Length: 222
Image (cartoon, rainbow, N blue to C red; front, side, top):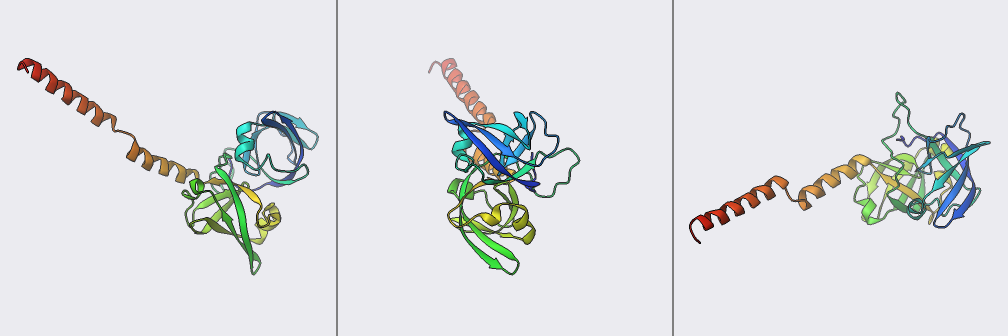
């Protein structure tokens, strides 16, 4: 689990394709990385499978490459990095799983004093979970949603975020990883379940009633 508070900006050192999957080499400044630990790379949770000088390597499955921008990043590209949350750490952003829901696109950016208003387009299946004043992770960065439209949403990038992440480098047309607030996802699932899934108790009661009617009919010779 992560918080969306970027701890460092690293780089994609190498991409070795292995069929539909890939072996990624990531340069990062983290000390004492351990095998098996999780690191979010542009918001994608990856497992450290080998520690190398100044970084680590990780496997990226076909699903990861298909549903995120990692398969599109060129060698040398800068990436946002965050190590997994440790028990007792500050919860500065919001709960981020590192499981990207979809890929969005930067539509426009506008300077507002020292900050920037940035608008992103998002797939409909992702946008349904995005709420005004809610949280969203963009390339792993925890941000507050300022407004939502039929096609996307907008956020504000304060000077610190501009300097500490790669979002200041993104331009109109660039694709970004999006992860919605996990709470919104589960609330939506609960509502869908109530509408679509039958009530087991009601179904059992209906079955019992039908059997009783059938037995009563046999008893009466019908």
